[in-house]
Image (cartoon, rainbow, N blue to C red; front, top):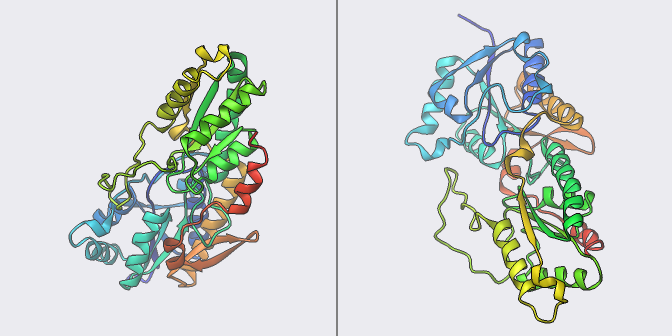
Length: 357
């Protein structure tokens, strides 16, 4: 009878810079401990079908330098499939896997946590460029995303100033505004709009007008994709994704906001004559924020988290999530991590407001 220990590993949800670094860290650690690692293809989809391959040293050599994930990913929700959980259990038994390392955000880890409660051995690794998972100081991928967004905003300053325009820059951030706030603050955005701190359209437009009147002929506004105007009606009948997340109510947020600002200023008779031709443009950074090679910080953090996940598996310490805490990689409460969202703190946003002028 084969006594070799085997574990599975998967990456779920959106791709994220640093995923391959985590995979390498976990595989290197497990192989060094004599544990075979089976890479499941396309997230929880692979856990249902059993499709994948065993990973060896050559498979993970140098992969931390590349973006994406060598295992592929999907947004498959095991819990929305009839008999899904039992199918995963059966596949793990069929493959001889004693446990799984699940790398993902709140949706992927939410599935892992539910399976954990059903008696399956799970270890979670927090992944999201949004940085909104609790129990960890920061998530890998966030540093890369904010640096990319910052560089884009930096470049937009010259165009906005040259043409005396207002430019609305939309960043990722469905529930929280960590990317928008950090990138906007670093790149000297004049106003940052995030879900945690709603503002009315009147506040936003009046802000742009006040800058123009004071001789500030251009304005950079950074907005998180999940931002909603204060007082705006919310559609309770919005469609949902596979994990029950409401689809964004404002699919053209930056476009609509820029058009509203332009119309409001052009039609305001109290504004100077040159505002009759005032222009406001928009830029949606979208998936570019999470594509490409990870930064040094995300490569190192991802690798460290992967190694810790491998150590937990080697020691049989299942039911935990690995996390960064005061520059140490520790085991954290998986259940708490997926039930508490980490929002931008009022103190940080208040500090950023000091430069909104």
